[in-house]
Amino acid sequence: MMKLELSVIDRLRKIVGKQDVLDQKEDLIPYSFDGTAALKQHPGCVVFTRTTVQVSEVLKLANDEGIPVVTRGSGTGLSGGSLPSERCIVLCTVKMKQILELDKANLTLLTEPGATTLTIAEAAEKAGLFYPPDPGSMKISTIGGNVAENSGGLRGLKYGVTRNYVMGMEIVLPDGEICWMGNKCVKDVAGYSLKDLFIGSEGTLGVITKVLLRLIPQPQAKKNNGSNI
Ligand SMILES: Cc1cc2nc3c(=O)[nH]c(=O)nc-3n(C[C@H](O)[C@H](O)[C@H](O)COP(=O)(O)OP(=O)(O)OC[C@H]3O[C@@H](n4cnc5c(N)ncnc54)[C@H](O)[C@@H]3O)c2cc1C
Image (cartoon, rainbow, N blue to C red):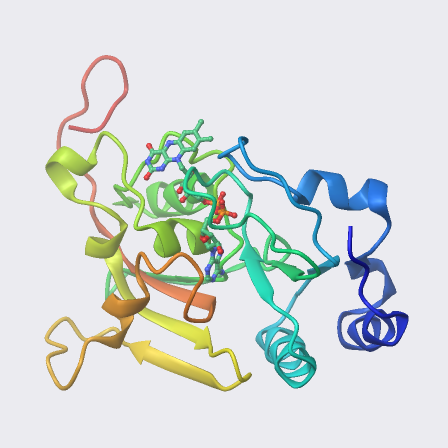
């Protein structure tokens, strides 16, 4: 296991707070693999961010120091996307889990990336609306991970996958710049669809810090087993 210099750990602690940086070997074990399970690698440390500005500061520091960053949601991914590389910073978004807005008039939901898919589906249902993407891991997986993997479950056959429900995103680019892609406008046609480049990019292009999702009206009928049809 290659350790990060203490000066780097100290600077990370100044950004996110002491309690949100893990660097002890035993604390790093749960973050040394993801759902792929076949592969394992201890990171240099794990950092839990709580705000977009913190994400930006962590990426700026990593960029300055030439330290790789691996973004992680709940670590259920099956393609090794959140598997650490040696001496990297694992940037974990699970503490950024607030649903920020549910706009019933425009049928949208704005959330932080660490909210679980189930929380989002339940918030939509409470408002009489429907968020269809249902990866089998939805009780645990985060919406940031869903977007980065373009996840879909069984309902995808009828309703489509995560890409079909992402209207916009706040992203922090690798140099720390914060930017918005997309918006609430259904007829959003001008220019390149940069958000579509980020969907399915497995954390390689930046960190998703907010997601604007499209909701739809609830289906009129439900089967006896409770599933939406
Ligand atoms: C039991 C089980 C059932 C599953 N069922 C399905 C299924 O039905 N359909 C399906 O598609 N998948 C399924 N998966 C795979 C997995 O759950 C999904 O890919 C899920 O979307 C990953 O979410 P996560 O929060 O665990 O992301 P992680 O595993 O933590 O990360 C996945 C990828 O997303 C990136 N990432 C995470 N958060 C961010 C962020 N905020 N910004 C940028 N990049 C980010 C990571 O770098 C990584 O590349 C299943 C997995 C398990 C274990």
